[in-house]
Image (cartoon, rainbow, N blue to C red; front, side):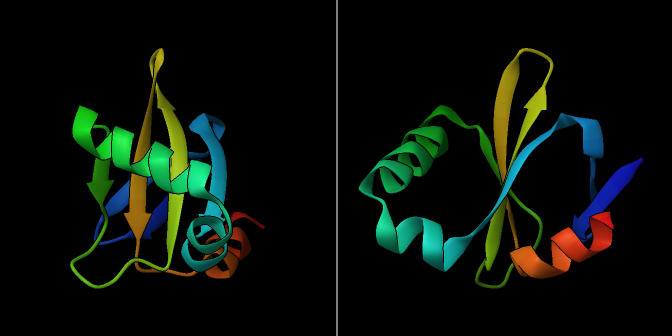
Length: 82
């Protein structure tokens, strides 16, 4: 099964490590900000839309991890999983 995260981007459910709310994760944690910045520099970040992201999904691609920013809220994405 796949999770549609917006803008024709689908991620296999079994590869998802976590779905995070952008505001909660970045405002409360300097570690998360640093991780996202480092992932961006490494080219591990992609976007599922052109608007301001509301959430991000951390997922596996082989042995690597990737981050996908989504314009959908974390609650909406979690609702799609159910």
